[in-house]
Amino acid sequence: MVAKNVAIRPSPAWLRAWSYWPALTHPAMRRLLPGYTLSALGDGMSVVAIAWLALRLAPAGQQGLWVGAAVAAYTLPGVIGMVALSHWLRGRRSILLGGADATLRALALGATAALAAVHLLTLLTYVCLLGLSSLLHAWGTAGQYTLIAEILPPRHRVAGNGLLAIAAQTTMIAGPALAGVLTGVAGPAVVIAADAATWVALAASYAYTAPLVPCRAREPPATGRAPPAPGGAPLAPGGTPQAPGSPAAPGWHVIRGSGTLAGLLSLTVVFYALYGPVEVALPVYVAGDTHGSAALLGGFWTANAAGAVIGSLAAPYLRARPVWPAMIGIVAGWGLALLPVGLGAPVAVSLACCAAGGIIYAPYTSLSTAVFQNASPAGAIGQVLAIRSAWIIVSVPLGSACGGPVVAALGARGTLLASALATVALALVAALAAGTVARSRRGLRGGSRGRVTASPQGPGATVRSGRL
Image 1 (cartoon, helix red, strand yellow):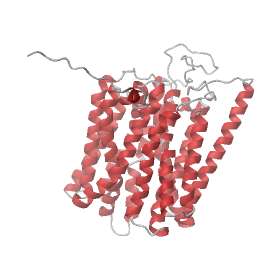
Image 2 (cartoon, one colour; image 1 turned 60 degrees about the vertical axis):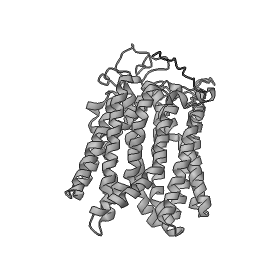
Image 3 (spheres, helix red, strand yellow; image 1 turned 90 degrees about the horizontal axis):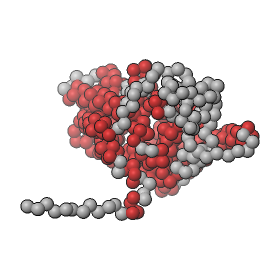
Image 4 (tube, one colour; image 1 turned 45 degrees about the vertical axis):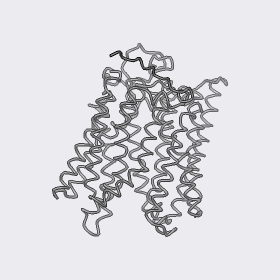
């Protein structure tokens, strides 16, 4: 039998010109994305299952306390892991960090489901297992985005980050609904078991992707030296280039040494903290002010998630924008989108505003992460991103924790209005600060102007007129 030569038709030109195409067709991304999407679906399911299982286990009168403890345990210990395990995990391969986080999640959640199935799961054991499952999550998140930086060139990193965001936002539309159905049919323990299985799939995806990821030597002990200059050679504390191969700076020194990274991290933490009360106030607003049902609350989150998918698709087209106008514009845009909801607009208008807010808000993570990826020395990307992840892990729960007392004092609609106004005020303050720094820098440089690369230029420096 004579084998026939089958011609492989090239992809259409319009598809190859799509901003996401180079990232989507990269061999390592094609291996990682299926497992990541499954784990994101599991995370969407866990939003319902973790709280519902706590409700079932908790005694009457203590349900709010134990639900809060369970939700916090699933996120906050990641900060402890970032600090306590830094000595052992700093400089490890991105694929190892991501795989270790996925494996620990799978084991701890699997143990939770198994104990619940045989009626041996106590509340204290439940909270402890959830805390154990999240211990490596800051490092795992850092590993994901470090992997993007290792396999994709800088011009495609926003698209790579955006693919992860699209997967997460798309599955957040389906995950809670699927969890609701499964919980009603089989109980929350089965949903948590399914979530554990999705983390197994992610761990397998990391193992499958590993051969395609460049292997970097483990980072030497930190010496407190500054990050690389734009030309590639690190800067010594006095500003002179060091010899190539000198030890990389620790993550905190990289962030402190760049005005852009320090400022962007500060903006992100406050921005996310101001969003936290929305998660507390919106359910109360729907149930009380609009006299709506759980279905209406689901409609608000679905509208927001659907808008976020669209916004994530647009992220690569913002890559050429200067850093600060893009980031500050997103912050201001989210605050303005939330404003009509806080002013008591009709439900249809409020739903449209939630969708618009999702479109505006979604590119923020992809764009800001790309700045950190591009600004960090190769040996310190994991440390820098782990620090960023740890602060983000803290900021939203901290805002949510403050949301309860604020809702009690201002009411649900008043809290939404206060969050919107505070977010717009944050954008104005950031714009004034960025403008002041830019004018000062132009004065020092005699009016010279540069283009963006998100590279730090030594202690106290900022990215020049930088673009994403």
